Image (cartoon, rainbow, N blue to C red; front, side, top):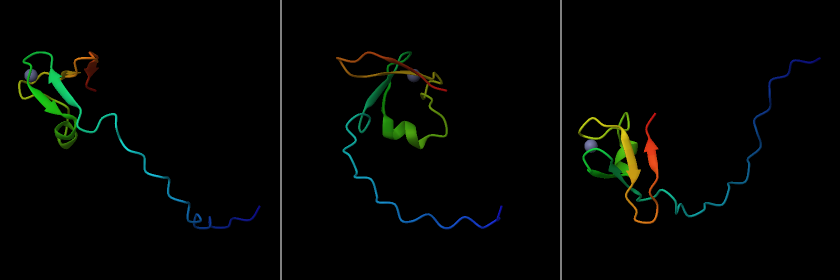
Length: 71
Ligand SMILES: [Zn+2]
């Protein structure tokens, strides 16, 4: 068994960027006070939390009503 240092990984072909159509610009609504925020805004915060302190959001989309529970 030879203990060789692992060779640097060969340059892997970059995966083709696919259009992010799922969460980009998605709007979430606090289920408590109804304040709307975007996925972008939530991503900036250290934790997913509404200004009212509640941490349960739902997608503010007419077709999709799904509760998102923050970790
Ligand atoms: Zn709220």
